[in-house]
Length: 159
Length: 159
DNA sequence: CGGACGGTCATCCTTTTGGGTGATTTTTTA
DNA sequence: TAAAAAATCACCCAAAAGGATGACCGTCCG
Image (cartoon, rainbow over all chains, first blue to last red; front, side):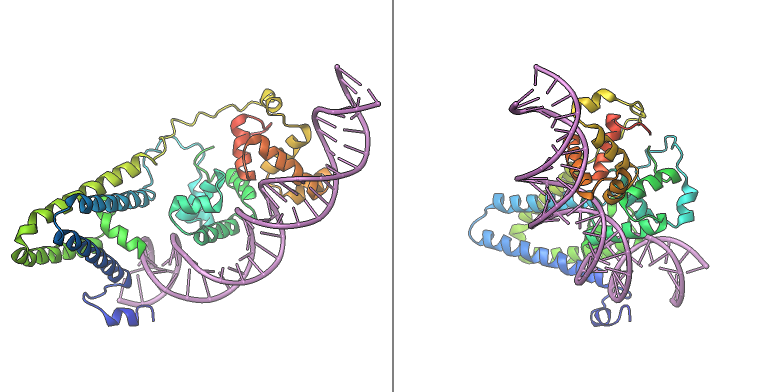
């Protein structure tokens, strides 16, 4: 029921999931677009500048976006420096996941859910889900109470 | 789609799971084959292809680099527990009244406006007025931000 | 006396949060 | 590989918070 119809329809490689297919299609479309642009300019003389500029802008945009997106998860191993009273056991004891912990820290920094969503490159709904479960695990019902609770539990890295 | 797409694009910079790598290699081979075929018919545009490809790679690299450079926040130079002192001057300097300060402290304790109102024996509206003026003076727009601001200003008696 | 200030309360309106439910996809683990 | 856990996103609804404005009432001080 999970990978039923879509996978069965087009299955070049065994076990290829829908997302891979979508990725392939997306890249294919991108290539087609580039080709179209290319031909348009090629047939009416060689205007390399415009085409090159488009490629430059497009891929630089992709670079910025992808670079940002994939360095968020990098846990930055720099902070090996003496954590004050970072009680890791408490976190596992409460069953707080990594993502939830991230959200918690951003909450304590005073960010709104929308700001957190932007920072983590996820949707607002996702942040709300994380925070909801977090509050449940911390046994609180508001972010300000969560801040205090997290502090008294020693869950936060700083402060 | 978004995630898988970008993951494959930039998997070299990160985890680089086997699946993505294999997929990428397959795609690469496919592209090479296409290029070979294309070369037979479009010999004259070969230079153009290389040119465009170089631009793409170059600017995507620039994008990643620039994106990282301008968003990575400074490595937090040893969080020296700032002023744990009660800076009374700051309070007068900002024109925060006694009642507003009371509200501020109750806010940092995680109380809701209603709870604060009950505690101070005033109406909810009054608390909202106080907090509104408080936020204005602290130059924030939410209680969680007010908490952090108050701390960095040394306005709070405790912690 | 008459402002200025602080405290109180109100109304209207918008945005943000919190709570509940359900679903799909990805990752981890047994 | 199959099951469990984590992460993602959506939709609905209600409560809380925030912004803007206006008003009333004490007290204090020039």
